[in-house]
Structures are given as C-alpha cells and as structure tokens.
Image (tube, rainbow, N blue to C red; front, side, top):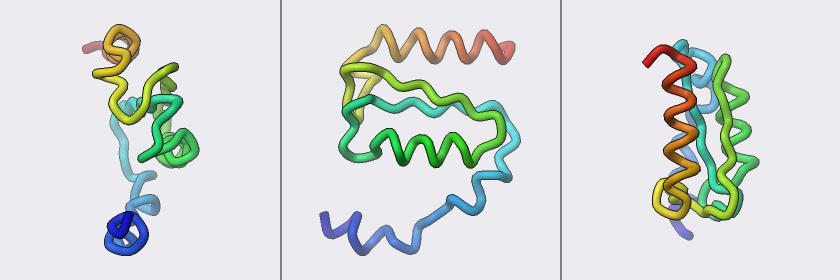
Length: 83
C-alpha cells in the first residue's frame, strides 16, 4: 500500500478531466477495492458527458469476473456512439 499512500500522490489528473472531449465509458465493479465506486464517480463526473456503468458482483476486473455484463456495457456504449 506504500504506492497508493505516497508514490502516486503527485499523479492527480482530476483537474484535466474536463478537457476530455470524446465519448467516455467508465466501468467499475461494485466490489472494486482498488478503484472503488466513489473514485469512478469522480472520474465520470469530471469528464463531460461520460457514462458510468457499475458492474454487479465484480471487483477490479469486471471484464474477467462478469464478462457478459462488461461486454454488454461496451457494446451498448459503442452502438450509442456510432461505432
């Protein structure tokens, strides 16, 4: 936990999130201990028009833990943005 308590402290990009001007999907597992929902909400709220998807019964790797839900979220996002 040394990294998260000290080493990454200068790496804070929250002030720059508002400059992102592309469709952005933020996905978080509801049991993510590394980047919890509250942190993902900060990211999603900081990016104009970002979409936040919370994957139930998943931790930090929802693409492995809940691949169907993860894939559905990505496909829906891509479809909504013409990809």
